[in-house]
Amino acid sequence: MISLMIFETLEKIPTTFGSAYKAPCPHQRRATNMMLNPLQLKHLNRIDESEADMITLNLEDAIAPSRKKEALHNIGLFLSHLDTSRSFIVVRVNPLDEGGEEEITYLNQFGFDGIRLAKVKTQQEIARALTLLDKDKELHISLETKEAFETLTSLRIDKRLTTANLGILDLLTSLGLPQSLVTEQNPTIDYILSKFLVDAHTAGIHPIGFMYQAYHDTEGFKRWCQYEKAMGYRAKACMGPKQVAIANAVFGATPEEIAKAQHIKARFEAESAKGNNGFMDERYGLFIDEPIYRDALLVLGENPCV
Image (tube, rainbow, N blue to C red; front, side, top):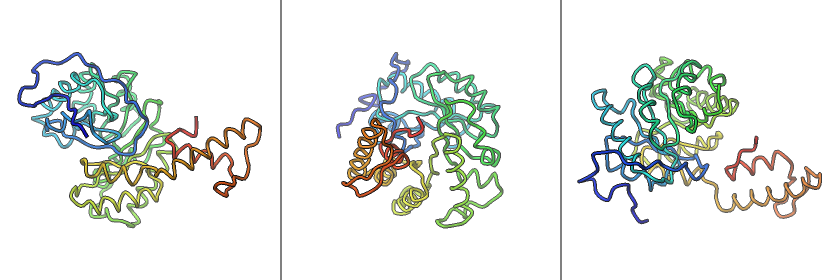
C-alpha cells in the first residue's frame, strides 16, 4: 500500500493551522475502533490511511494532565491539514467538568466525525455535550461507570448519540470489582458483556467491545474477538494495526456470506413487491421471510430498522 500521510515529513511540520476540513466518512463500517495517542505524531500523521473503520484520538486517561493542551493542539493541527480519511475520526474528550467542555468547543472548528465523552453518568451530561457539539457530528460515549451501566437504555435522548464503547476495566473499578475477573467464560464478565450488548441494541446504540490491553498477545485478542462475535458483538476496540487486522478478519463478513445476503435481499425485495413476504429459496434451501431478510441487511451493513 502506498503511504499517503498528512505531511511528507515530521521534521518540518507547519506551525500554523491549515484550512482543510475533512470530508465526512465515506462508509458505514464500524467493526474496528483503533485508539491513538495524539502525542505520537507519527501515528497522527497516518490517520488518512489506516485500515481501521474508526480512529479515536484519545485526550483522556492516557494523556498526563500537564500534556493535555499539547495533545489537543496536535489534534487541531493535523485535522486542519486533513482533507479526507478512510476512517471515521472520533476525538475522545475528558469529562465535561474536567476540561471536556472546553475541548469540544475548541474542536468544533475542525473537520472530524464525532466526539466520545468519557465517564458518562447521567442524561444531563449527554444533553450538555449535545448542546456544545456541532450538529453535523456524532456523540459517542465511554461506558465506564456503574451509573451508565445501569441506565444505558435511557441515555439515548437524541439520535446523534450513536455509539457506546465498553470501558470494562474502569467499569469494574466503578463496581468495586477486581480487573482480574476479565477472563473468558467468567460469569460476571459474561453478564456485563451481555447486558451492555442487549441494552445498547435496545436503545439503538452501536456497542463496541472492550480494549484488550495485551497488545502483543495476538492469539488472546483473536480469541476474545471470536468469543464476543459469538455473543452478538460486531465491533471491537483496538490498540493498533495488528489488532485492527485481526478484528477486521473476525468481524467482517466473508465473500460467501456477503453473496448469500445479497441474494436474500434481492429475492425478498422482488417477492415483497409482489405481495409475497414468505417463500422457499432453492439456491440456499431455506424459507425466506422478514426476519431472514433483516439479518441479511445486518450482514451487508445496512440498518434493518429503517
